[in-house]
Image (tube, rainbow, N blue to C red; front, side):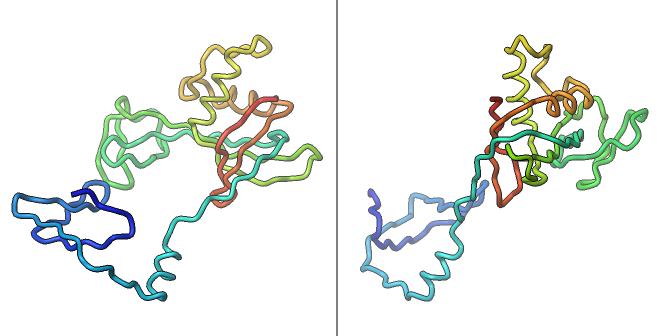
Length: 190
């Protein structure tokens, strides 16, 4: 049976299962039948409307980076939480989140940065978090540019000093900013 938008259905002999999201799981005994339209009261519709995800406010800013704080962490292979490296000489780490002890050599590094941005008139735009995927994209662009001596585009394989100095030396860029999250979505070098 093909379901139609704005139609009402009655489900019998189904189970609610969870795998990333909730979904209905049918069996041989399951029955789906069309029923009369259910009139949803306006107060419930208004409450449901308030629960819908809002569009994130994005803003395009041309300017430059005037401050950089590079953050390197290790990702737990059990719970995927980020762990700060406390003792670099130790071969083992304990995840603060799931309390699992892990061999450090099997933990993947994650690099991100906190950037202080100014616009073209040198007015402060604010402090924004820049995820590793955006940093990798910037370094991939710079790797192909003969003006920069960048040989590696994977920021987990370069030094924090190189990341910091490279970002600070960019004279002009266009930033796509997620204002609600204070995150950098993309950086285009101008």
